[in-house]
Each structure stands twice: as C-alpha cells, then as structure tokens.
Image (cartoon, rainbow, N blue to C red; front, side):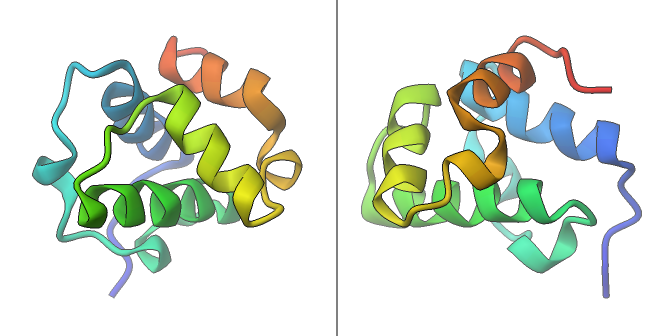
Length: 90
C-alpha cells in the first residue's frame, strides 16, 4: 500500500535525509514504490542502496549513485538534489 504522502512531504523526507538533519533509518522501512513521484522513488532507491552498504548519504554520494545508474538527469540533476535538500521543492 502506498503511503499517503504528498509530493511536498516526499521532498521533505528526502531533503532532510540529504541535509543530514534526519537519519535514513527513520524511513528505512519505506520502499521506492511508496513514493508517488517517480523521481523521488528513484532517489530513495539509491539512498536505500547506499544505506544498505553502510555508505554516507548526502547530495554528493546520492548524485554519484544516480550517475552510476544513468539516472541523475532523469531526476533533475544535481541542481534538484541541492534544491530538495534546501527545502525548495514545491
């Protein structure tokens, strides 16, 4: 079942994790399919993979992981990761 988040709430979750003010573990039970936005689902998938490997989760590591899978531009590029981590997603 999909969680009842709005796109703004999804962005808030991802942004807070990226900026480091919320631990990924607080949302580790979610899956990419819980996100209504395909972009947010892709970003979350890569964050979850980083978390599973014990790697740091921040804008740089997530951007690198998205690039590794050829998904960075489809997710809005580094500028979107910066914007979302600064709470600028509407």
